[in-house]
Image (tube, rainbow, N blue to C red; front, top):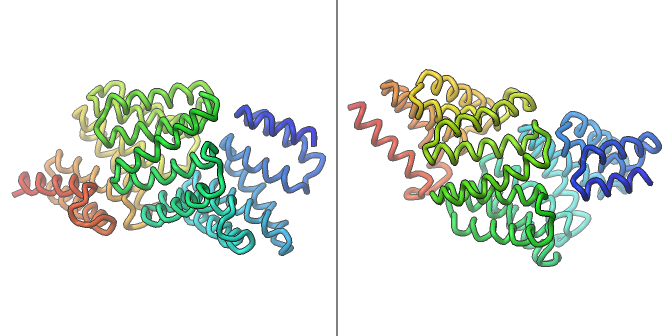
Length: 383
């Protein structure tokens, strides 16, 4: 129990490496204790030891499935492992285990339990990654409805619900609603959490992407740098979230026209991602696509084409046929072929991107506008 309590103290200080060491000692003494192995799986996830995290969660699942009395604890393990698979980019298994957790919690806890809200929140992020934005928003709203009913107005868990709902609004192009919920989340986090807490960095990072969508590049840069400062101070140099910050600030510098800094940070993000992620992880596709854009603006179309095709290969392999990110990849490749005067391929990939976006958004939606503008430009060039 002493090692477990020490681990909890370290977790409260965001010191997951020392928490891992203490939990390891606790498990040596009692490897059948669910709370030890459950927390160990969570901590392994936080220190990016994904395969070990899966191993411990699966061990818990195998033990707990043997008795109906253990259903409540089994839901913990299902929810935890779903989030590990989400980070690994294995969205099929993330969804499978996320739905298992919801089914159990709904059955044994009822419709208004905090743990059910947690599962709804997890599922909203999984469906967001899957590109099913409406279903993601549905689960985010379900989680928030429960959270607002039972949590204190300044509870960090409520901030997470606001943040997740904001992400769905942002993806749907409703930027003012997204801004409102992001700021609600940030107000709670800044009031309750340490100034270098990872959740505050997450808020800054998300708000930066929102301001970039709103074309307010001054604020986009400010918030991206705030997130980066916290993450460089608190995270391992090869942490996935640090790569996200490097990628985000790269995009801001790209929009500002500072191609040198855009390239510098994009390559930093790529270096981390190639080191820690599977070669077919969606985050790698994001990096390849962003670097392709930078090389395009630098006038190096050969490299731009190479990176855009690398990103597309991953997206075609890992994403559903109507995923918005796949549409973005097709569009990026279309732009490169347009610049290379390859009209046939430019048209082909542009049409693929429009087909996906039309399946996601109604005619006249702002998210469709760019794709149709590109179509007109291709038509002009390729008469």
